[in-house]
Length: 88
Image (cartoon, rainbow, N blue to C red; front, top):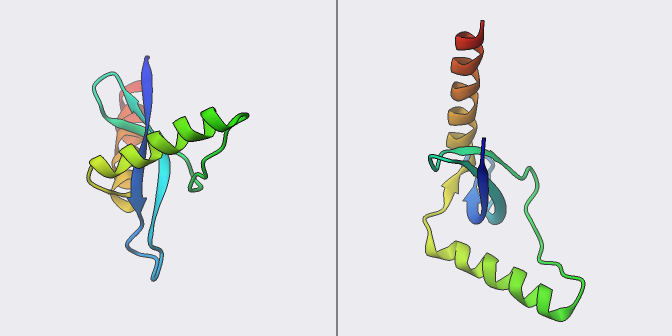
């Protein structure tokens, strides 16, 4: 299976005051979310140019709608249950 990753602005509405943060989100070949980084990300680079590139990619995350992590958890768990059922 091939996959891709993208920075996305995410939130978890069930946590009071949880706010929004940038997470790394991984997609399958068909554009479905397969997983995401558990912790929010901070920009980092070995050299200033890498840091600038990383920050630019994070800024690009604002071009897409924020993702609801509760909903992503639901979709990921549902896919896992279906996969387990088909393999069993």
